[in-house]
Image (cartoon, rainbow, N blue to C red; front, side, top):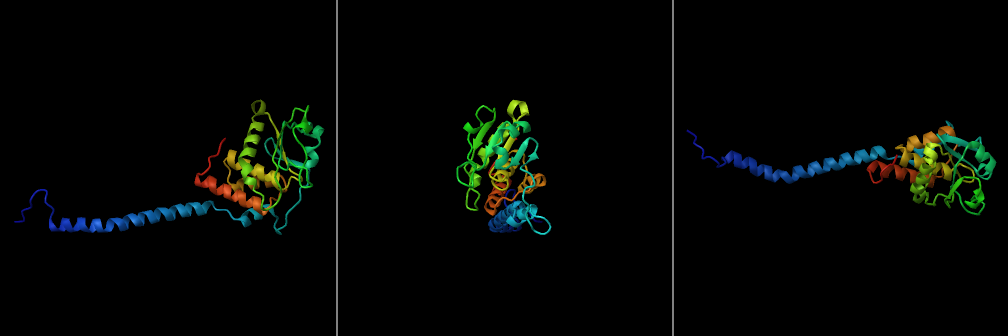
Length: 229
């Protein structure tokens, strides 16, 4: 008869525990590797290429289009346009604009030389961002600032505000800031945000700005930034 002493492991049980101890580091490494692979796969699903965004901006022939109008309403109560409308206070008033975001503040030929004084007495609230339309200009440092201003403009008078976001041509700098707003405040990914604006207006952010939007998309997907409604 096989008589076992209570509490004392049998040789088979002892061997099982020994094997388990030896394999534990290997199993732990395998689990960690699997988690890393899953995280990498999740991150990859949010990666957006420059080419993918450019494909959204061009027609079937791969050509970009120039804006057909001076300004367009690209999202409820958000208008994107050029300097021609920005400097026409009467037209802005007819549109019901309550806030102006100048994405090209400055006095060079690439910029629009307006300020709060320019709109003095009109009742229009002004905010300027001194951005240049070049690939190497870091517009992303102004994404949150612009999103905050647009959000406050739309909240004006219990949600009756209208904001005109412009640069020199309403083609690169200003639409980029609106796209960033849609990502930061409306929980859109970069594809949806860019397509939303492009559906309403012909735009063409430079490749540097598109890369910065891709980076913003990645940070939002990774949880490094929080969106705000």
